[in-house]
Length: 312
Ligand SMILES: Cc1cc2nc3c(=O)[nH]c(=O)nc-3n(C[C@H](O)[C@H](O)[C@H](O)COP(=O)(O)O)c2cc1C
Image 1 (cartoon, rainbow, N blue to C red):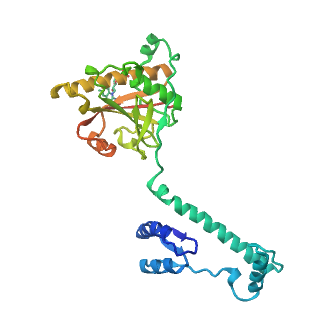
Image 2: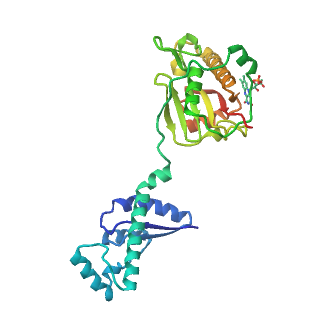
Image 3: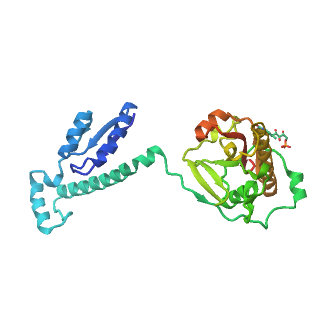
């Protein structure tokens, strides 16, 4: 059980409160102790109806007694933090300043609360131009190509991710929009989704960019094997049958499986060239993953592929 204090400025404006009340209710339902400090009349009534405690702190400068002298002095000088000569008054001035600062901090936190609870917005990533002059000789890369299942959690640098996706299925002939892997009747039906710790993206080959799909780490659902959830990148190859109008229904699975194979081999070769670890995987709960990814019925997960630095 935790104790939460929700504060607002002492105003009858209910805007902030109507946003914070559902959060407070949810926290209370989860067994936490909630207190408000929103002393104006309208919020007070709302909070009483909702059954929350509402603190009504007496501001030290408004309290009767020796401090009232100070209020007059402050007003006269038109200064918020006037000098106070006796020790007691100095202490209350410091306290009220701290209370004010704490209220400001809490106000900022409350304004950001939806983002904190519902997750940060996932932004599009413009990838870097692929580095076309790198890489090891093809025959040596073929000698090293292999499946690996031990990954370091270290993130891939953006340039490496940019190269990897371009090698996988980027546009290598801008005039025609054709790609680094073949596809039956140039239907280009395979989409590459990229699951990372930050969220799920879709590789947009035309823009050479990652489009945000889901601000959630779904790596644990990208495969049954234990290394999948900790590796920095899991590619999910999804066939979009709506782009295969020219193919017969019985050929769609065959063609898209073949197309995925070419893309996956490009990834294998790039990884072998760059000293990255990778493994292509069929051992995936496809219906569950498709649900989380929000795929349509005519989008089919074909395979997934994990990529990362090898575990040392
Ligand atoms: C269609 C396909 C599905 C595969 N599925 C998995 C898988 O789910 N998990 C896994 O660890 N490896 C999987 N692999 C990788 C194979 O196990 C691997 O390629 C094979 O053992 C040969 O090893 P090599 O790739 O190092 O040559 C798959 C490979 C292919 C072609």
